[in-house]
Length: 347
Ligand code: DAH
Image (cartoon, rainbow, N blue to C red; front, side, top):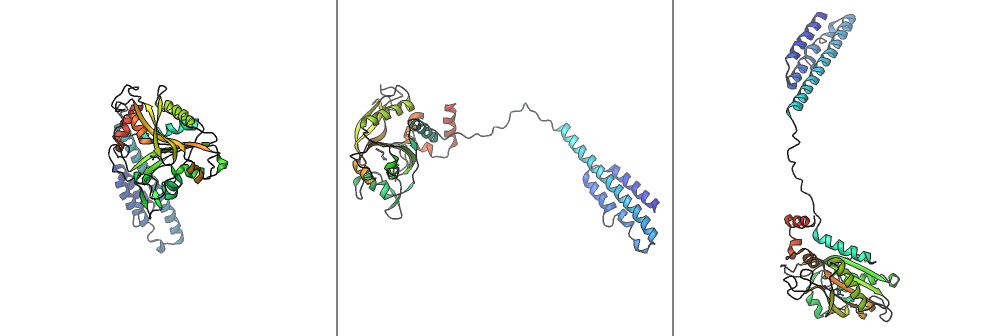
């Protein structure tokens, strides 16, 4: 028996020596240690043996099993090490090769302009608030002094949903009403609301059915048009440079009285006249005015006590002016090259 075990071990060792790849090792393992492998076979006729014989065969075969397993495992490790060494010596990493450029994200230019406007207003004590994009007619029009059937509603061709009570807000002005309705306890009110607005406009270079407005509202005692002018002037200088001057032109909005259009001096030509300002020297930035007494009343404020100003401007227009973009669709197409271009300009 011992002779047989020795013979098996030697056979195994000589076979192992020839092995070059681990697949061959798998076969050898099966040949010796498998169910009907040579070592397993040793114990096949155990039942015909005496107790003592069984004992010795058991010991011999178990020892051989352990030895064979150790031999095969050692060979396996040897093969793995050889593969690794081979890899290490052949696969040289050339660190001087140029790396593949991973595309980086870039800040959205519109978002950037809005953040800039927000930070200027916040430095003047304004809160940045939010309002729903799916709005009630009541807030979008009614409370803002634009009753049903009023011509001003046509000017803002609205996306109605579910009859004529729910709509996609056509302006951010309803957030004025929502803020005031939170109660007199909150005065003075100083808020801006940047947000998406929707109109049934055909998209072209200057129109988009969805665009961003930034609404502003201030309500306190003894507020006059001078306060609006001073605020507007400060903001314009912050956003467009210290030599930017401003002017008001009379206008008309249902929810303000008096109403104005606010212009800034053209920052490209400093008033001399150029294509950006259509040779006028001025660029219109926003609509604004003193909060209409009816709006104050509608929202629970006594116009004899409280007064305020409001304004609203298009964020895209602001960004277009600042970055010389001549098509509003640039903000909403999916061409990443436009984002990259503005990003590079900033660096
Ligand atoms: N909501 C106006 C629009 O969409 C813009 C506007 C004008 C807002 C005057 C105001 C304002 O708050 O006072 O055209």
